Amino acid sequence: MAHVIIVGSGIAGLATALHATLQHGHEVTLVTKGELADSNTRYAQGGIAAATALDDSATLHADDTIRAGAGLTDESAARVLADEGAAAIQSLIEWGVLFDRRPGSSEPDRALEAAHSRARVLHAGGDATGAAIESALVAAVRTTAVAVHEHTMLTDLVLADSSGMRAGSTHPLPVDQAPMRPAGADAGGRVVGIEVLRADGGREVLSADAVVLATGGAGQLYSHTTNPAIATGDGLAAALRAGVATADLEFYQFHPTTLAAPGNFLVSEAVRGEGAVLRNERGERFMLGAHPDAELAPRDIVARAIAAEMAKQNGVPVTLDARGIGRDTLAARFPTIMAACAAAGFDLADGLVPVVPAAHYYMGGIATDLDGHTSHAGLFAVGEAACTGVHGANRLASNSLLEGVVFARRVAAALGDAPLPELVEGRNDPLRQAQGTGVDRSELQRLMWSYAGLTRSGVGLATAAARLRVWADASAARTDDRERIETANLVTVAQALVAAALLRRESRGAHSRSDFTQSDAVARRQPPREVVPGGTAQRASDHVSGDTALTLQTQGH
Image (cartoon, rainbow, N blue to C red):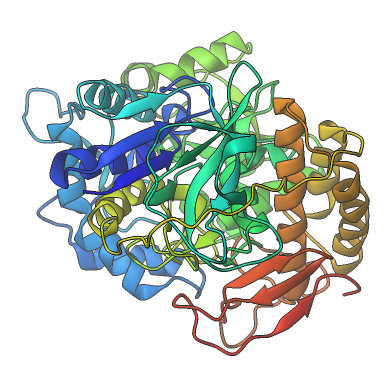
């Protein structure tokens, strides 16, 4: 039995906790910076994709996933996702998720979504799938022995002292007494715990045999996002500071259709799957000329087509036309979206609804193998925080919820792999120096939206990189203010994203460069690398990538 800390309470974190404690008997502590039910998962509308129908197969699902990834999908990861999808759905059912059924039938109601070759997307509660899953998993976790620490924010990973390591307990220690130190410039070694900020402003260290980062994405990097306020890249930022290898950080997916109203409420792809179309201000279906699949093309293509049409219209949003679906069908399938449109003054069933793209999902993240191992022993990652390569350069719709469950099971099975050596005491030196000033988060978001958003350029990215270096210095203060810590995390992630975007001198998937508009003839993933102080990135030479070391400067491209 291992002592395990899981950070994050979305579908990936909760599923890992359930598998780890119920199937493997691990002692689990789950840490989340809000309430247990606060996560990106609860906002997911589109559903969860899995090949469960007689006319479908895991091979077809994997092929669709690979095709959507624009040449960069890791085929092994895609096959695992699809092959183990049906079992993941069964796990959710066992944990209490009630999927929608066809009227008068016990057969699941499967929907078609963009870039899927079959109707394979399952829903729960119509367009409230994420909320239904989150609610069921939270209830399931509450019945187990999992120790839940709510309103507890990850601030840093903790590495064992170079002279030795220990298998830690999950009992908190005051930071100034902890026989460990937060991960700093010395990369490598074993992660043996986390440093956290409690709701009362106090800090403490939690130690464990293994740490699982299930901290989700970083949508708050951008002015317009479907993500809630908690999505500030905390786990990824902590990993970057620790020198943990990351991958595909240039690829941030923008959902094509969010309400052109405050809050950027997401209008699910499933609405287009039911037959809704996109129109410009002249009433034309512009997607007919953009891609053979028109409105059901992959997300990156639809999002950029919308942005291009908006540019022609001097920024006026395009509209979603769902009038052909019928009010009864819309009310049954999309009650949440119908209500959100009505609250904003639009009638989805009998009018044109203005929509715009918004930052939605991070394909990049902490580099892992198919069992969640990272470049650092004792550290695992799962869900949106991780990067197995399963999404490539563009995620297929409704694959993210499935990813969370499939890889959670694999991570849970791998947690007890390696025993820890005996403790040798070390130091607990603060990672950040006690000086510096704050950064205006809204200014950061505008910078990223303008220069590292839907379309990038070398000049724009270099401008962003220069500004981010200044902000990185300004946000370096060690602070107990949660908002400032979150903003510092966003700056850290932004630097890594911009560095990766500068290195990819082509357009592919969600990464579009106006100065390199074509895709290279051969698709290449940038190797997993460590980001180290001073604005450089290094390739990780570890079990994630066995290539020789290479230092990559991030500025001046």
